[in-house]
Structures are given as C-alpha cells and as structure tokens.
Image 1 (cartoon, rainbow, N blue to C red):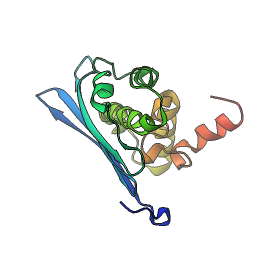
Image 2: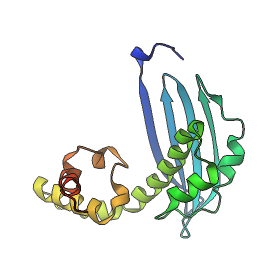
Image 3: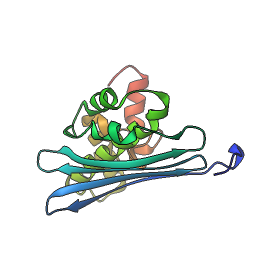
Amino acid sequence: MSNNILKFAMNRNTSVEKINGSNLRSVCRLRDTLTDAEVVIEVKMPDMEICAISGYFRHAYFGEIEDLDQRLQAVIGVRVAAGMLKIIKGLMGEEEKNQQIVYMVEECCHGVILTLTRKVLQKAPDDEPGKVLFYSNMVKKSIRLYDRCAAFAKGTPLVAELESEKAQGGV
C-alpha cells in the first residue's frame, strides 16, 4: 500500500448470489490505497436473518482489527430489515476503527434488499421519463434505498426530487 494520499484509488463492490437452494450470500469488498477488506454474510431465507458471517480487514494505519471475528459473529441472528443499522452498530461497536467494517456489513444487507427488490425494479416503464419517475417514487417510498447504490446515490437524477423535497423541509 502506498503512503502517498495524492495517488488514492478506491474500489468497493457488493455482490449477492443464491446458495443452498434458497439462502443468499452477500459479499462486500473494499480495496483502496490504505485498506484491503472483505465481509461475507449468509442470509437465511425467508426469515432474512444473518446465519453466517466472516471477513477480514487490513488498514495501513489501523492494522488489523484484532477481535474482528468476535465482532462479526455478534450480528448472527440479526434480521435484514428496517432498523438493522442501529442493531449492527450496537453489537459491533462504534469505535473509529470499526466504522468501515460496520458499513460493509450494512452494505451486504442492503445488497440483499436490492436483490429482493429486483422484480419491482423490472416493472419500470420503458420510456426514460417514466423510469425516472418510477424509480424516484420507489426511493421515496423506501427511503433505505437512498444512497445505497450508484443509481440512488446523492446527486443522481433518480433522487433529485427527493433531495429537493428534503431541502424544502419535506420527506
């Protein structure tokens, strides 16, 4: 890893796949100039509970998180649903060195949610203005989708109306 922050590069991705006939595996990977990390969760369906988890975290300045496995195991049994971030933070801790790994666990969970909403996403109209309106309304109805993927990221056309309403004191 380079110590020259002017040459900073980051790649974060999350993927979800079906395993064991019905369970889902979600993997979040982070590679940047300072960090090499991965979190893998298995979610039991249809209960949507985390039934297995593993991962690693290496950082140029923080090093490894010594009790990472213990912190990860604490979230087994958490349901992938509204309110999960507060529960995950409470179980894993909110120390600075844990913030990225907590975010990655949450990102895995949101990957599962987005995978399960795929059928809804496919119901969007074919015309471009109709798609924008459809997805914009979808994010407004399910605010946890906001800023969870590139399409629904801050400043994108699909969330412009939501951000405008927030700025005016709505939503």
